[in-house]
Amino acid sequence: MTDVSTGPLAGLRVLDLSRVLAGPWSTQALGDLGADVVKVEQPGQGDDTRRWGPPFLEDGSGDSAYYLCANRNKRSVAINMADPRGADLIRKMAADVDIVVENFRVGGLAKYGLDYATLSAINPRLIYCSITGFGQDGPYKDRGGYDFLVQGMSGLMSVTGRPDGEPGSGPMKVGIPISDLVTGLYATISILAAVAHRERTGKGQQIDMALLDTQVALLANQASGYLNGGVKPQRLGNKHSIVVPYQDFTCADGDILVALGNDRQFQSFCALLKLPEIAGDPRFQDNAGRSTHRDALLAALGAAIVQWRADDLLAAMDGAKLPGGRINEIPEILADPHIAARGVIRPMTRSDGTEVRVLGYPGKFSATPPTYRRAPPRSGENTAEVLRDLLGIDETTLAALIKAGIVAERLG
Image (cartoon, rainbow, N blue to C red; front, side, top):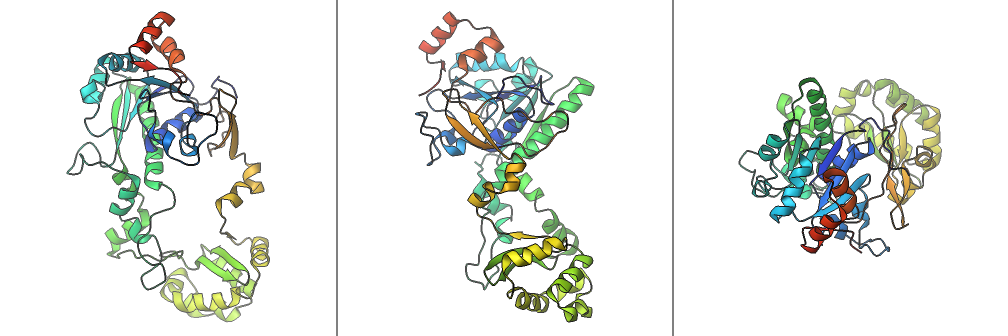
């Protein structure tokens, strides 16, 4: 690892006042792409996710594996913003950064003088991204928002899970905090758009990101079908709402996934399964027909597929250039040779020598690849370094700030 950034965002500095996931996910992406990210944490506590375990690291830090997933390529500074002197330190840092990311409740930072109105008056070029559950306005703006709540409120859970009447039916949340993660990604996109705007105009702006807005936007084709066709989406388990066949099937020794996106693929699949009567059936000649007569088609395909061993059928499909795959468990995909070849898992070393593994940035750049400069830091690990670099604070002043409880250095 190197501390030198060669990424496309080298030269940008981010003040990260966020915690948990949506904000840290966004700032981690900015850090991967070269930005200098300064993570501000509360002394003695740090980011909430440091304690979200088990599992925990065994290096004495008490940091959880959860925390590691969203906090590499950052420097951690522990400052008590509830103390006016601590808030003043943060304001001084904000005067010389490009981007602030925060996820406090609406108005939560105003009492510290760290809201957009205050900081933009000090730094008119500042891009200030606020991430909340429900946005800066609207009837729900004062509510606390969490991924699980938003998955339910947004309608996502209503279209996720087995259909009514099947064993285990009912609304189901997605297995990862999708609302948090994608809000973080949209925040990153929005921040970079604001950077481009500032390059042209010299002016910063505030970005208002809401988990609920983002998750509703992700309803995509499901919402479009209702808005433009009046069709209320239903839970279909692993079946696609429109494309058929596009689901799991049971082979003689396990389940596989089949995803046929066009008529040519369907005809090739029927030929592979030796089902000429299905290929020639007028009901199944296009996707609209296959969707309308879904039950009859799936019964015929299922009866043929169950005669195959999973590996044999997937190999045959691969040879015919038909999309299919296994349903992996997480240990299986993390051990997959393709994942290794793509460099998805990245080893990093913390400042105390502890080795950790993280999932790298998925974009592959031909000229300015992501860099992995800093492992997820301990809380306050870089307090002295950051205060020196950004504010020119010397050792004597730092010692006084620590003694007064305004800042703290590394815990553990």
